[in-house]
Length: 477
Ligand SMILES: Nc1ncnc2c1ncn2[C@@H]1O[C@H](COP(=O)(O)OP(=O)(O)OP(=O)(O)O)[C@@H](O)[C@H]1O
Ligand SMILES: [Mg+2]
Image (cartoon, rainbow, N blue to C red; front, side):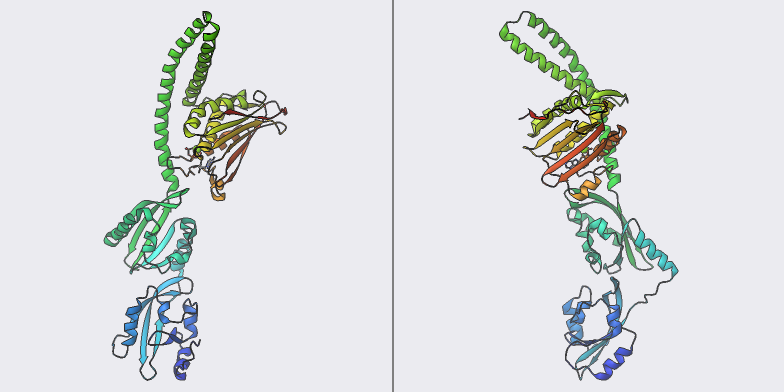
């Protein structure tokens, strides 16, 4: 291939075009004048104008010196990192010869043999198909190859890595860059090192990667292997979480029990006072009475929830259960500045069959997630209806941060969480229990707008009772 309109000696181009080694002619600035076919075939060429552009990490000053002193220098063979076709970076030997009369340089390159034997093929196959993200780094710290998991681990193209220094990997962990930098120092020192670190793709997507690096003295390369340990870390967290939960559960149960006794006494005395009350004080006593009932209802829920599952099947009203559970989360909503709206209509008729304690936990998980997705001013809206024949439908909507398509796909997967203290087991529990009750669940969400979970259960009545839907703001702040 001819570059500039500068004359290159005909016999040189003739000889160059005949050789199987990549060859090029350039002037003392490195400006290319001619390259042979083999050069075009072996090296990635985006129509570069200067030979220096083919060198990975060129120190321009260094090459300027080399080229301008070629007449005097004895050593005319150099090793350069060059990107080869197939997106691999190789150390290539470059022999230079300077022709004083025309002030041109001829370069011939020794590209390492690309033929691979069977065992190499097996190795390459294992490398390409590994479950781990693998990076091969040469002895000078230049990334030589990566397998195809670069997208799933880092959502970055191959080009981000190939030909770059190990600093490109350090940069991926900005929060832990010092740690990772020291890690690679350890690799240099001991030939092996392992670390587990956080990779933050975005605030909603935090992964834990275990990085193991090994130096192979025979091939003089470093092999970096990254495994996704996000699930295991979540499991460990979950275990720690569930231990603390069971302690909290036991504590809650004993407190609930202790509070119940004095409340029974209070209730008794309120009844006594009512006998001798005037019309005025009667009003206050009735309020006290109702409030005690509410406190008792909440305590009963706490006791039930802290008890291990009993798996009793009964027929119960989903609407009534929803109203009870709203009472349980109401104090938290109040604290968080969140309003709860209930489209209340068919409370009694929304009968389903199953384990009401399990369904209570399903509701709590859905309400809790919705409230955690919102900031003060948000609204949690809940409805139960019988609009579909033979079905009881529950809707839980929030005006929270919502989810993108990627998150939506994963919400029911165990251990998927975007919360630092989340277990990612809330929604898998929800799904499992809804399905065990013969129901289905669908989610709709939009980032910045909110999320809606629609749960459908088979009705215990087997037919629908249509009633007017009246939206009623039951709890507003
Ligand atoms: N209403 C919602 N709005 C926005 N994101 C949600 C909503 N519900 C669930 N998610 C997303 O789904 C993930 C999984 O929810 P899940 O309930 O299974 O676990 P978690 O809430 O993270 O943890 P835990 O339930 O143990 O507190 C959440 O981390 C969150 O990213
Ligand atoms: Mg949850």
